[in-house]
Image (cartoon, rainbow, N blue to C red):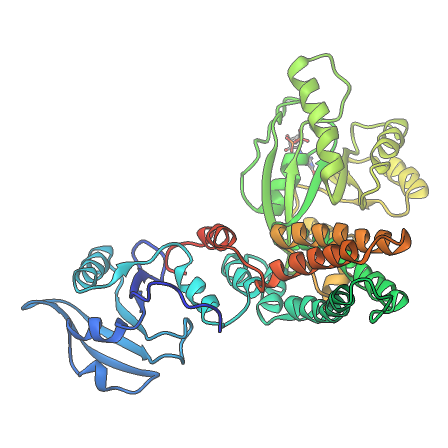
Length: 459
Ligand code: GDP
């Protein structure tokens, strides 16, 4: 168990979203959670009930009945926070909820700070820091892939790997510290060859985790996808069809989609963040030129580019020129010919001859857009994720991994350059520190405050 929170007061917050719902759940956690609730609850004596039981009754402010409620009761340590926990399921009116919370605050509870329930769970050793952060990710996950990754992390998949590596390194650190104790004597408890091997192994894993961050980011935030094409190619129409909503402005006047409209859709459990762009046409119009520049910049940050052109209004030379330009971004690339309903069959044949991978459709036809969704999934290679590899999604972990990498690289360099033991020991200690930061074996108050402040109140 970690050091206990200094003040073991009882905290209270609404656990369900703000706003009107059929029911609202108010949660209390702390030593006095049960006794405080008992002072306002009429039904049973809550202090005499067993853990994991539910009780029906009324909440009263003096003689006034505030609501009929169900009380779920958890006795420490068998609860989320490992403290006494009460969950009051009341009717979901914000008036009732406010009245009950205010009443319980008058009786001795204190409003919870953001993430305080999860922080208490962490403090009492319910899970480590990476897992606590995964709780937040899990609650925020809006696609199946993001959900899977967060769930995996919460169950410890990510932390276990880090902890294993860290323990191996601790062994070496203690050997080297021992050598330091012998001072002048020429002893070597930690074989430099074995140490180098271990550090190289560690670096390999760390590097893979660092690289997984790109994928993790994609899973958490969606695959950034650019739809590129000349004005009037049908980009907005396509985007609307994909989103099934009128998000972008569709118009007959070339060049009217001047700004970016980002939106997200879930295809096959994976979130894609669509970025609608101004056209790629060379132009002297200043506003539109800015659009083109920004389009090019966006192109480099995309993980998928869909090139769209109007079959009735583009020459083969133009198509090939634009494909050449875009394909160089080194990003999965989809060639999409639009306005199939207006196309010349001979032109289609020519295109098919030169681009066997080109997809033809009419963006106005929703059924044809389904074809596109399938192709998009094929193109974006998320196999790595599907295999259940460890994926880093958290910027804080990413940062600690980079720091670990630097420290480990310094260890190797130190050994190669035969620097004195105390320097090697120092670099190993640094590596251990950064690895420990990820799982919370090393924490500071600032770090904790920073992490938990990102949670909502009630979590
Ligand atoms: P953008 O400038 O690339 O965003 O193009 P828009 O989506 O605004 O489309 C330009 C025009 O082409 C609009 O009048 C659309 O209705 C029309 N359009 C888009 N897709 C198709 C299609 O598949 N067939 C036909 N006939 N017209 C289309």
